[in-house]
Amino acid sequence: MSARGVLGVVGTAVGGLIGWTDGQAPAADPASVRQLFADLGLVVGGTEDELDSAVRRFQTRVGLRQDGVAGPRTVHLLARYAKEARELRRFEYLSAA
Image 1: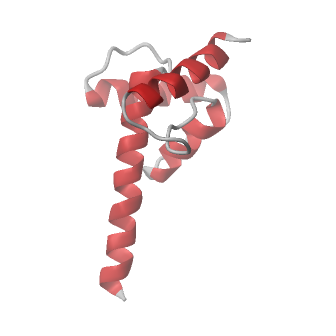
Image 2: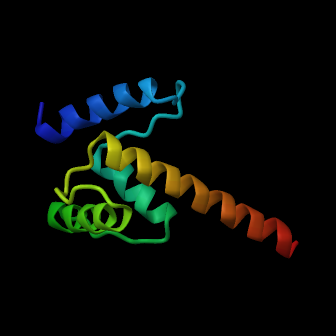
């Protein structure tokens, strides 16, 4: 298993420890991380370098150590902000109706 695969398993396990229940803990695989960025309105290119760069920018923005690895803390914050962005869009949609 690759280092990223191990981080995905660890991230999901840690998610359970910090309060996510079944079905809530986000995965740390590249496709899932790209989807979380998309939920924030950010399109990340298909290469690993582009994903690493996006992760580094996000880590810098939220005050995490900038290492480019979507580990448990990074994925947790990314998922939290993505969830908030989805909720805001839903609220804006309901307000416009």
